[in-house]
Amino acid sequence: MSKVQKIAIMTGGGDCPGLNPVIRAVVKTAISKYGLEVMGVRHGYHGLYHGDFIKLGLEDVEEIITKGGTILYSSNKDNLFQYPVKDADGNFVRDENGKLTYEDVSDVAVEHLKAASIDALFILGGDGTLTSARDFSRKGVNVVAIPKTIDNDLANTDYTFGFDTAISVATDGLDRVRTTGMSHHRVMVVEIMGRGAGWLTLHAGIAGAADVILVPEIPYDINKVAEKIKEDKANGKEFSIVAVSEGAKSLDGKQVVLKVIEDSADSIRLGGVGALVADQLEKLTGSEARATTLGHIQRGGTPTAHDRVLSSRYGYAAVELCMKGGFGRMVALQGDEIVDVSLEDVIGQKTKNVDPNGELVTMAKAMGVCFGD
Image (tube, rainbow, N blue to C red; front, side, top):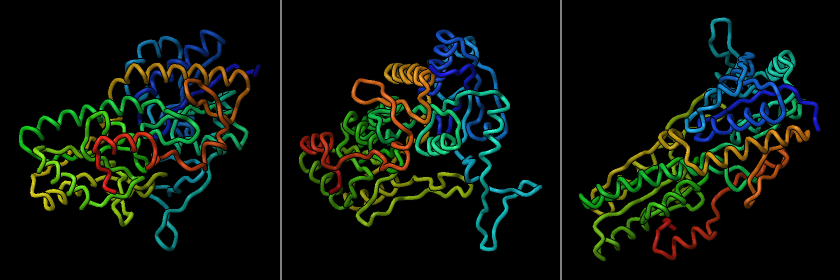
């Protein structure tokens, strides 16, 4: 057993349903079973850089299992291993080519952990956040990682918490636009999150009975999508539902970029493909088309019962892993079992993407769903 007495927990990256249930499970297990002292790091890596710690007791987490977001707050711009340099006035420092300059400030965070007598750091996050978790582990920090992303694209875990809630929200969105599509004989296009992975769109599209599902892993031909919609109309179906991932690619391989955030570790913000697809389909089919972007409502709100249970399992397993000295590792769901894997086998690996020939895609195609290929 490890000689851990004091731990800290932090959340990084985009918010996600299930973060608070994980925090609750970690705090309750650490205190109730092992008598540990628990600290929270506020505002993710930004808070770690500035030493923003708060003490967490049982009373702080008792009522948070139903709450979305994170009581510790988060940040998705702070990579302490590549931190933008600012001058005395708070302006970004640029090189002769006008590009931002960076420095490694990770040692500052390590010193804050040492000064606070933190024996182990629990990090909840997705690919970006856990990349830094791996790097802190390499620097000797006792890291325990917990996978978080609504995109479900992390390697070596079957499911991440937050995914089920996001599916439910996206499916509800598809259900709601269906009534408008039916009433007005429209093509209803719904843009769904997921970055470069199509898991959310695929699951929600199947659950929401979409006629067309466009995912990044299967480049689409808009003409084939239009043919599907016209064929359905000829067979008496007066409306169509199109579920499109924000990272969907046309045959030229291009994604639609909403904007670029210069000082963010994940600078590319995808968005706008739903409106593009709707405009193209209206012109090609002659049917009125409308686009809806679900956006951040997929990240918010009360986590589903499934995510509350999965989050609790992850939080409990992370504490058990810590007390066994399993540092530099991430708890993961494989099959029905919570296991742990090395962060080295998670980060730097190919992200988990939809298999174009996998069971779900094959099933959907057999039921008449068009993927644009």
